[in-house]
Image 1 (cartoon, rainbow, N blue to C red):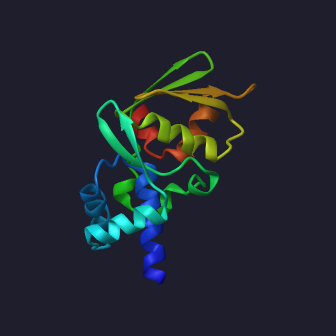
Image 2: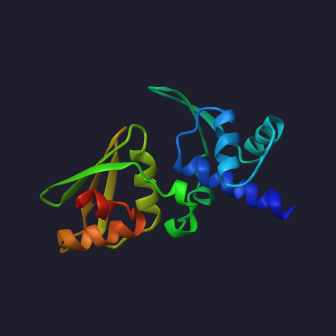
Image 3: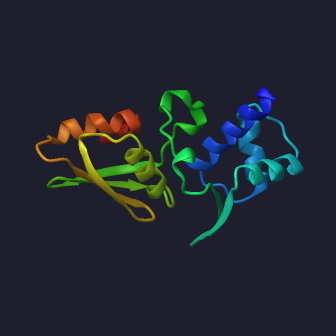
Length: 161
């Protein structure tokens, strides 16, 4: 039973942080996390998690319902290394806005991760398909915002270098 709960938690993390289009993709990601499972097991696990198929510009994507229970903050260090790539490809600033450029489809997930951490340095986020606007809170310096975002997106400082 403990292995099943751990597998379900791994599946939650995968669905929350990666673009997954099929059950075969899920089997592959679970295998990378150390779980060898059959297609019927994946199907059963997706039902237990109430996963949904969402239409995107690139086809369909499997996602979790938008509930707080599925969106609790997970420290990035707790994730396997292959899940720590956040998809950020660049960042620019305009006044008190940080504009994060992401791989296609990553912006909304990053916005949800940032919002779930309730960072006092962040006034709010607005996500598109591959662009994320992060507004600095009043009285916050740009470097303070970068430092705060780096706790959620460790790869951010590498993008800035």
